[in-house]
Length: 391
Image 1 (cartoon, rainbow, N blue to C red):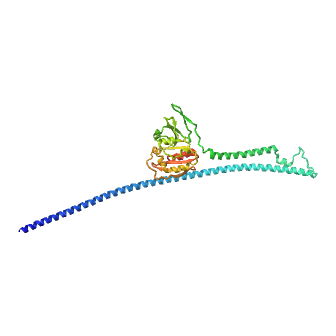
Image 2 (cartoon, rainbow, N blue to C red; image 1 turned 90 degrees about the vertical axis):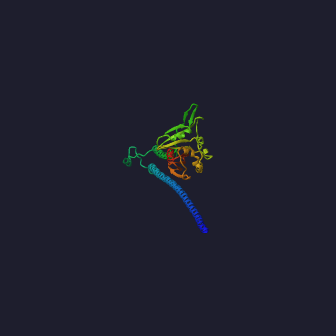
Image 3 (spheres, helix red, strand yellow; image 1 turned 120 degrees about the vertical axis):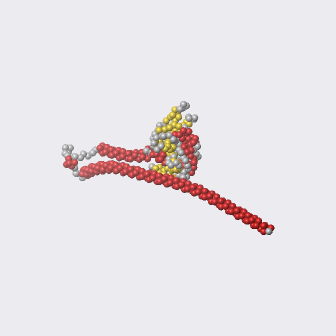
């Protein structure tokens, strides 16, 4: 009996141990399942984040591609307009040249006709004289013409032979006429290639302060108005309403030193960096201006070139120009880097200018060297309007 009683007890213990083992196994499996589900959730979250980032990158890439396509399209349209304007100008010049050529040919023809007529008359007179000499040599006398008698030929034509003085005057008049036409042609081409490309300088101005008169350098382009301000007020001035499609000259004054800042002093005050020999190749008294259009103000400057090798220096500077001009671009509202660091090239009125675009739309760095002037602006429209001012 005692043995029988111990057997159920042992069985109960055995089953209890087995049940504990089963529970532990179930618990372990449950923990593994929960861990696996947790890992799957974490993996899914990471995947969603990566997908979101990938979508954001794709959106930025599409936006950059769209901006690039728009910029290229705008450049192509501008080149097309420039080409059409060039063709129209060449057609006008060709027509003008043809008109001048026809006029010169007409005058030359008239002169040659008069000259041939004079030569014919001289030849006939010489022939008559030789005939008289020959008649005298042979002992024949030519009938004398009495003063009262009139030859039939003369009475029919009523023509009076010009004297030596009249011939001389005719030749002088024809020569002066031909020289006048030649002088007109030469004067026109001299004006076209030299005088018309030079902007009309304005008189030197002065401003009176409490200490002395400050001389304002001559402006290099005509502007509708001007402002005298310190560098600290430049940011606010760029936000003011300055009209529409007009130029405002900026005269940067240093009231403490009672002077007008030159190009080097202006750049150094703002923290703008330039190549070492940049200032040596330019006149240090530029014309700083703002071009306003549709409520947007764009800064620019124009300076006279002193050395012909400025263009290669500027192309080398392009690699750091965006960073070096950041203080000026920031005043104009620059919000990001350029989509591509390489400058592009365009042509307007036979002038090549290079540009780099960056956000917001319509903002960028544009520079050109034309007619011994260096132009730097911060939008394509402002550099085109500046070239118009020079041309």
